[in-house]
Length: 256
Image 1: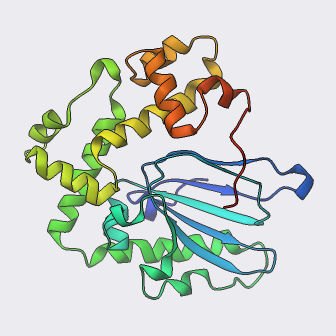
Image 2 (image 1 turned 30 degrees about the horizontal axis):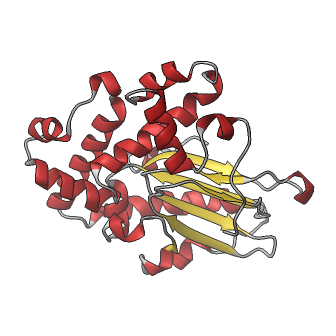
């Protein structure tokens, strides 16, 4: 889905998933992701919830669910800390109700007037509520958020051959390496090295289906030392080797 203008500096991506019939359900795969997300979902009983999904360091596999609406807003690096007011280290591999972090969040999920208006009404409320949360932040908080965003962008843009060490990024941003590492942990939830590991595996996920006959090429493109390095890292974070994953041989499904 297109990100509304007022949310573009806070939200990088919006995806909407609607449930299939029970007999059509496919496994639900949550892949590693260093970004925090807001997730709005409704049940067939017309109950709604707005959740916060923190950084996910490993994949998880679940049976398909029957939520009729599930809307995911992927927050930009640095934005989650400003919006939620807690260190992102507290949310790593966790999903919590937004009301635990944000007083008054219950009003964002009030039942719409007509069934089917859920997504539209929630997005309208978030367009007003999210930017308003930033308004009261200090200039120092905003500056820290910008440093986190710039660091994440630098780490995401690089490949194995062009890798820029965190010390070099810190010098370019005119802060100490230690300070920048602390900011990344606080603002994203994981240290720079783990952030890089997650991003490399996500590159494999993005390009794997087109490169299944050229694993060595994909390993180099994704920033790994070699194919064996890629296979080991992928298995650690995804639970299965790359070839097995893209062939649909997944780990046993778990309850969410």
